[in-house]
Image (cartoon, rainbow, N blue to C red; front, side, top):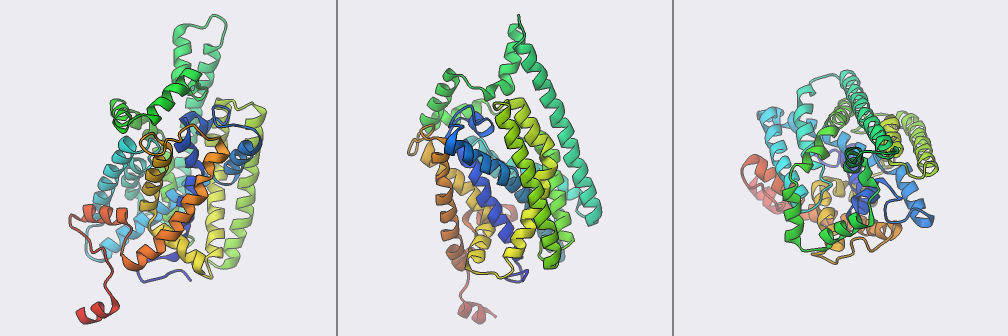
Length: 419
């Protein structure tokens, strides 16, 4: 069954729900400890025993795959919003543009006042670009999407090669101070010194005003966190549009077709992820090699695995049981759940909350993930039984439309009386 109501598509909501939950499985480490630990297990948080096992499991099964799913779903949902706006006589472009402008504002607030790992600004910019290709056929969307992914791989490979050269220059006999500084300002940051770790902990365990002041004084850092990933994100959105137009993401394909995609795609992606993990451990977590393996060599397999996951999720959601409905509700409230996890996690770890930043090993910090998942599943469905939107979804919609949207659902009796 593809839909739960005339204006909802169940498969989109369920996949989005799984993705927003899965993203926190890897993001929790970036909340809990120094940023370098997210990219380099050897930097902080432990890289043996349970810590190594957790990192490896996330690398093989989750990291990159959930972000890819989320980006694809953004493209599909964006197309759905535009089509419905145009069907009701409104301008598809102006509707979409206002949504992206408001989303960009949310992203800036999220980045500067809550957490550095914001993706909303990236999605807002990428969404404006992706709009230009909305009328393409599924085949052309797939072709252009893959082209953009490949272009991004080439660009990132060029950057990583420059970092490899910087590493060699910085560690060569008689290296100049300039060469050393260039490496330390680049990926050399992924090998933080004790002084750098202490400075980072002091910042995150200090007062909120100090934290925000630091972010605002380094306001242009967001540019480097956004621009390099636009081609990849636009490409994934276009693949999501293709998945929507072709019926793949809306659940209209046969079970046999989904099975033919799910099994080999997930297997290939998992094998590639295992190979990357083996290389990372064998290289003693050499950061240039790790990032080259993950964000360049593994990108095609991550994308393939995301499609496999989407197919599997659609198959498992066919029966639309109680768990499926709760995950779908979490997906309908994905915007609130995404921002909400940032608020909750920073409260747990940062100094203006419980102050556990840098206190836990990798696997210990990860234990917050199933707690957050439970919160998502517990609140989303009961909330949507009473209200039309999640809190942040309501704010986004109201700001984009320039007027407050009806939040509370009308009772059946009131609806009949109004009719």
